[in-house]
Length: 322
Image (tube, rainbow, N blue to C red; front, side, top):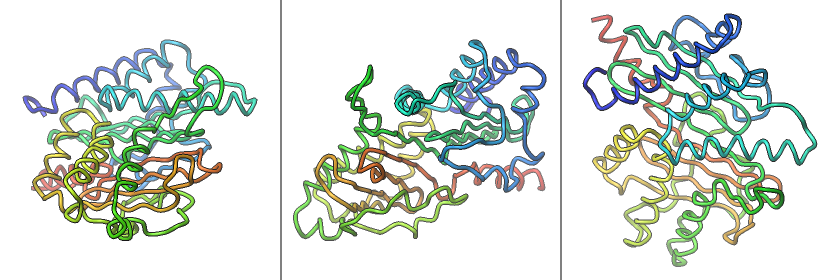
């Protein structure tokens, strides 16, 4: 990665990992490195965005400097806007626990994969309720999917954060798109009156675009509708570090934006339970706000070829074998 556009991001992550290791106790470092020896082991593709414990180092018992180091590492996997979203998922989760009368510290789990100072692939992940960030780095690039952000509630009704809608732009852009369609286009885009209860890909280890409805193709939209769809896609891609986000968008443009399609299910008024997805040959995006009477949102960005850095790992092991 030396001299490439990935070098600065990789170096920043490496420094953040070293800063975290410097403030951990030996037992904590052992928990951080929990996992199989090979970075491409099937276990690394196991994930969930539901409540519950995960393998790895928990943030629950961390002191201030340790938690600051984790937060700094989390920020390196994102653009400034993406880091704000990731922090927001944690803040909304704190609100949810407070409203439920729960006490205690945040419960997220961090794991380090491989050796950040070696020549081989390495990476890390941070997972917990409504937050799932997965990073893999090789000499050829960086990957950050699957990437999941959720918000429960989707709109905070009271307290210091009253009115906050963490995933408001994700919802509003899609609603503006679907409500602006004429009857003929809407008939193609809206695939069901009743939305699914969750994202359709759930926590599948591999993303399958065929699980998603095709909906309305980009080529069948007006120019204004196409601009809304592009803005919606960029809202997800731009969660990532700038170089990777730009690569994903450039690949999408090069393949042809007409390969994109948009589908919606459920009501179209604010507060209605609803779901949408964007499908392409390379990636998929899903959003649902269906649980808790339409006040519990999920959003996910998956890459068909890049999830878990599968393409980079394949290239690395092929080169190594050669």
